[in-house]
Image 1 (tube, helix red, strand yellow):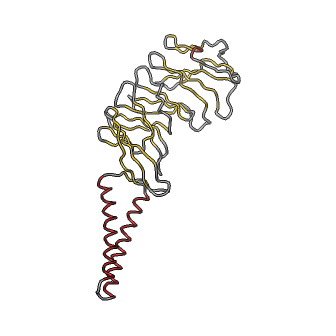
Image 2 (image 1 turned 180 degrees about the vertical axis):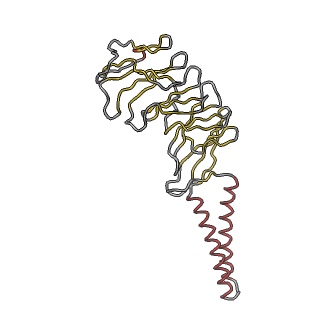
Image 3 (image 1 turned 30 degrees about the horizontal axis):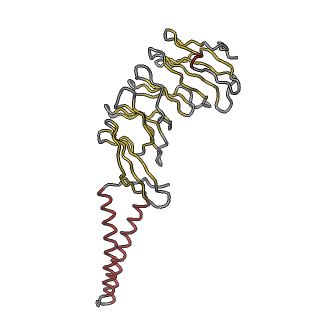
Length: 281
């Protein structure tokens, strides 16, 4: 288990430089004392003490460096957010770079992987953070106006943008490791829509109704053994209830449930694929 790296600042850099200076000064002073004309016992004690102090100082510097030392290497402003970049120096594997995310000079995460801003609420973001010794990779929501952070689920890829926002921007459906999560900004909660104890299904978010109450999902069956049928589902974002609209057979190398295979009519999901059927047995 490796120690958590330390964020470098001007003071910490001065501390390291001071430790090196004091260590070298103690060693040089010990050498001068040993070469002086004082008695053997006295100069042995003085020189030994100075050498020990120098060794302890160097050991502390090496331990600090082995933890991984982050040197500030730049920053980028995005509205009220600032992404600070760090170059990591250290022994063995502790080399590379890292980023931290700040909002109005307040740290949001010091292990930023990526983030995407809300399409209309400029101070709301979805961000992902790398793991620590005690915390796994996670996907979070952050609201700068209320200084709230909410864990959604495991690590997701958000760099390409999130297309699952409801028309009013209050809710988000995001797919993480074949599990759909529903984020409700007004209620400030995130819930998985499927049982995490069961084998995850290959599912895709397919869009919202115009009133933002329901959304479409296609389910292709368990990841390890895809079903013979791909179902089209209508989910109610308020009650979390699901209705199977129709299913189509899954044929090898044949795309199923394309955008033209279903539509919304009066905020009700309707299948219009030519081979769609209501029973999937």
